[in-house]
Image (cartoon, helix red, strand yellow):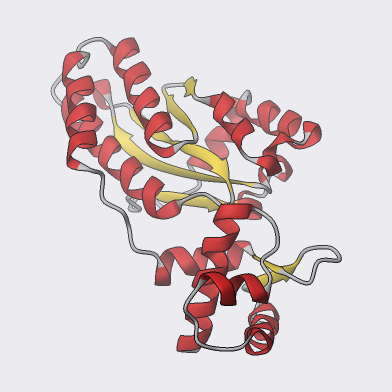
Length: 239
């Protein structure tokens, strides 16, 4: 991408995260200081689409980021938003308070993850699957469709499928981000999952993370999952 294309693409991603639907050139010009005409933006959008970073949604003249495009955004353009000090203190208090009660500990951790990110939180440890905030998935228009939601809930009930998705990462990765069709699971095409592998009680391995729409606020969710996973891991070390 050229520098101008990066600027335009980042603006498209930001608009997509706000409105879910296709983003038009006029929206980019009106809401972002790009310094070029709508016609120039349209030409650059066509080139970005040809490169695989954008796709055209049905008959709309606008574009949406592809899975490849969102992956590029995360790796090359995104700046992580650190967890606020007050929120980190709150999270550490929750962990310390229940560090010797596994059920309460995981419940509090998942509640914090869900509330902090605005997405559903999940943990998968020793064949035990836990969730918090599943109702938050209904906050996103693209996930309210009855067929989409039915397929998603069926997947979330399947330990076999989720284990395959969560454990598909290289063991050296600190964080795993699965976007849309990257999961190879039809019911997750409109979703994204962020998870972290961590060491749990008795040397067990577990996964902790969040699931939400493809237009997830990755800059917020990724550092939160990282931080919570490490704090939890340290809290149970030596049990």
